[in-house]
Image (cartoon, rainbow, N blue to C red; front, side, top):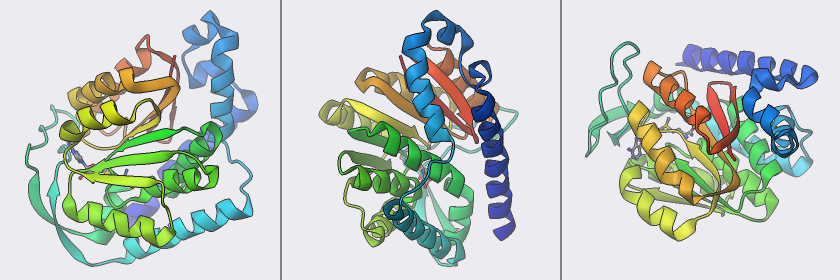
Length: 285
Ligand SMILES: C[S@@+](CC[C@H](N)C(=O)[O-])C[C@H]1O[C@@H](n2cnc3c(N)ncnc32)[C@H](O)[C@@H]1O
């Protein structure tokens, strides 16, 4: 389990270093869509530059460090936990070479060890800090997350919102037991701007989109099937605000996920996009 975590963190670091290099030379053709940047440089460069600023390590204030340390402490607890939980698993089954097996409607009932679940499913620390910086820089009013798991990525968004003193996060998770753990974790950190909804993305989305739009930040980190990812993008984009940020995790998880990401970044409604640390970032045009 520990080896898995170290491997994950190393991959993240390697990807982050790649991006730090880009910071100094600022080669948008390596980062985003050169055609889009050429077409309207003044309009496109501004959010892209803000984004790059967030990508690279910001100087963190004392208040920011305190909240991030609390998240690290929770990470440590989860990682060391050998407690078993029963949960409904809604995630797609990975098959790199064939079509992914579609996720089941009612979820498979499985037993998982918390520490293993944490190592397999949550974003790594550098991705978390990246998300934190994005939300601090862009100050979105309403954020949406698909895939709460045990609340780690939600904690980074929630911590940034807490420090922004504005905005809220709605995060959706299919498993009852994971939602419960996530709520407890967010409470322990002292985050008040997050709401976790338990149920399938497909079932909650129409109501959430209708009632809480426009969304400024959307993180899609669950149900990693090509068609499902494209469907969520199609469903959400009319409810995304101007220059909203879409973040897709695990864009190299399968060929299908990578195809979905390439289609999304080529979409005419996306003005700028880049890959970072296994995540795809797309700004609405
Ligand atoms: C990769 S994990 C999310 C990790 C989390 N974002 C983090 O980094 O802390 C994906 C989560 O999405 C949930 N999920 C997958 N497909 C779903 C669906 N169709 N509806 C609801 N939840 C789903 C899974 O139960 C799982 O907890």
